[in-house]
Length: 258
Image 1 (cartoon, helix red, strand yellow):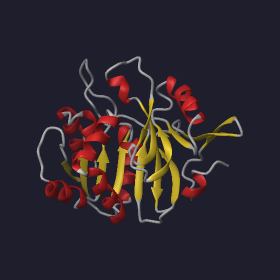
Image 2 (cartoon, one colour):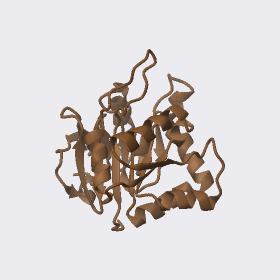
Image 3 (cartoon, helix red, strand yellow):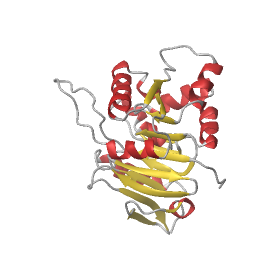
Image 4 (cartoon, helix red, strand yellow):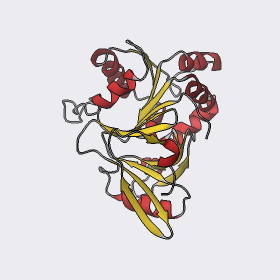
């Protein structure tokens, strides 16, 4: 495993103030985690670049995220709208590599990764990682940093479709499963998926995140009840181990079957 100055915060899920269908707004749930993202940027007023690709650049989502990071958390915020706007590669590169924090939104992970590859964003995110730019995000924006993901991408067209195993950016050598406590069939799907997958999975509840700094990792949460788990099969036995919050461990140890 290459040792880098990488900084990654992958969030299992949670609300940041989206409008409700019947009026009003969902509660903001991930502030403690988002403040940690800002803290590790080592900037007082960091430049946050929002990538809403997985939601097809939803204008409502962009407004909520920009408002949240700007007004509530005191950041400078920009968005990279790969679906709705046309940029040159030079413009995309400038936006990504001049940011202090990259925050990737939720939605269709499979669609997002295809669009990223088309525009060379996957390679630019690797460069951002090597520069020590904070890589973060929620749901699809958490899955993308891992080698593999347990994804609901097929469900956007067919609600009855199964979860699928996606190949992602492989910055963290494990499989990620988000929304572990919110979607009942996630655990069943993950158990079946890991039977055919070498290595381990990290399962994150909403309001829980895996923070990776260099070659160390820890579980953090914005709700006391939110947890994270290391999941794998060993000698034909299913293993599910709860991660200890706020305890730094070697990343190599976390992704090892022990």
